[in-house]
Structure formats: C-alpha cells, structure tokens
Image 1 (cartoon, one colour):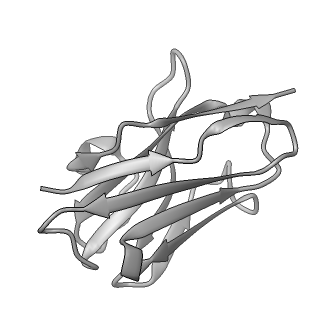
Image 2: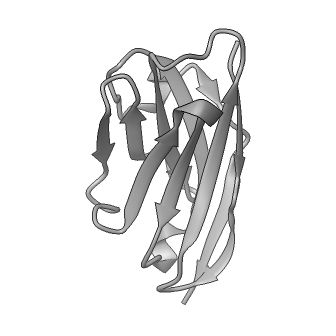
Length: 125
C-alpha cells in the first residue's frame, strides 16, 4: 500500500503563488512510480494538471497550466512539489495527488491506484 498526504493549499489573490506538497509513504513505494496532480472544481470532472515520472525523469503538463506551474520531486523524501505561479480564479479547485506503478504519465484518473485526501486552492479575483 501507498499513502499520499498533500499540504500547502490555501487562499491567494489572482497573480499570486502557492506551493503544494505530496508526501508518499508505504513499503511498496519506489522510484518506479509515477506521481501526478489532478484537480476538481465544484460541479466539474476531475482534471489532469501535471505529472512526473521519476525513473524516466520526465514531466507532462496540461496546456492550461504550462508556463505557470512546475512539478518537481525529491527522491530522498518521496515528495513531489507543485509550484503554482500566476494563479487565476479558474485554478480554484481541490487538488489531489495520485500515484501509480510504472513510467507512463497517464492523464485519466481511473488509471491511478493511490490518492491523497486533497487540498483546497482558492484564487480570488
């Protein structure tokens, strides 16, 4: 089993920045996992934001966040970070960290086996 714990959400004005963290733990977690961020706004479906494949050292961003969000990982801490800059009101959502075994950064939620509890990000205009 893998456990994921997110932190770092909050309220910020448009144009501001936030950094989210997702700490992974569990006996089976390793660098062969892919970790991603999804988000879900009220009344909307869960949306892929960005992913990182540690073993492959690759990342993939949704078009809506390219140039504004940056994902990074700390292998020693089994933690991924999501730096969010130039935030917009439409970025408001609950942000979820997810993980799956393998190197492919999939953009569909059902392919991920492990999920965090979510952290709220609210961007005011």
